[in-house]
Amino acid sequence: MKNTIFVLLLLVIISGYSFQIIAQCSDAGVCSVGHMMDDNNDNIFDVNVGYKFGSSGKEDDVKYHSFQLGAIYNVFEKTSLQLSIPYNVQSGPLGDVNGIGDLLVSITQNILSDNNSTLDASTGVKFATGEDNVENLPMAYQSGLGSNDILFALNYTYKNIGFGVGYQLAGGRNNNVIKLERGDDLLVRAAYNLLLDKFTITPQFLFIKRLAKSSILDTSSMTSSESFMEVENSDQSQLNFLTSFQYEINKNYSLFADFAVPFIKREVNVDGLTRSFSASIGVQLNFN
View 1 (cartoon, helix red, strand yellow):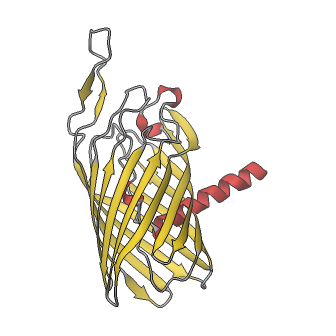
View 2 (cartoon, rainbow, N blue to C red):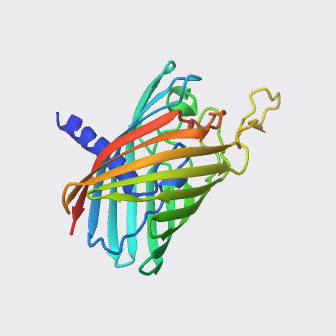
């Protein structure tokens, strides 16, 4: 019973993190690093708990359940530390896999702030804490990507409008049966905050460009040593539309949800990141 309660708590925390951080999407992590710092927020520590659901679509029909725990600690007035860790469950025709996902740790520094605009810079690391080769299944079934990646983000807001750019430096080849090596990712984001009393609605467009083709083990090679081949069309772009909702119950608690669909969808799913849609709900706890 105690283990069940712990897992449920862990699940709720992660989707809460998705509102505070740049909106999550079907990417390798670049959408989730950094957050918009708020000069009017006097919280020292925020904890987020959430649940996220997604589907790969009809091609391989994998369902994703992610229970996430996240936290933001304001180290200094203009500096904050963020982390998130998920517990992931993947289910599809080839089987079911579950386990701890990849840990994401990042730090955000406010560079510029005045009455109308802010500029924040973030850097982070995604650690390969999740399994990437359970039962030799494809990457779509794995809880982790199997590489230690470095992430960067720069976010600018002017009144209610936000713009951001991010970059994910992929950390090399993983240990999956296909020995996947992803290309780097570039993110461009645009958002608008609509404030309605205690409600905040934030529609966003997120454009992600894979900058190089993925590389996998060439099983057709007749040589004794390992050789690799590029996956055709694995460097395609994707464009996601995501809307986040937040309701402030009081200064200590708020609820949030989001829903995302791709306008441009990457057709090649060798890295297991393609989603036909995703949605999350969660709660955020603020400590002064």
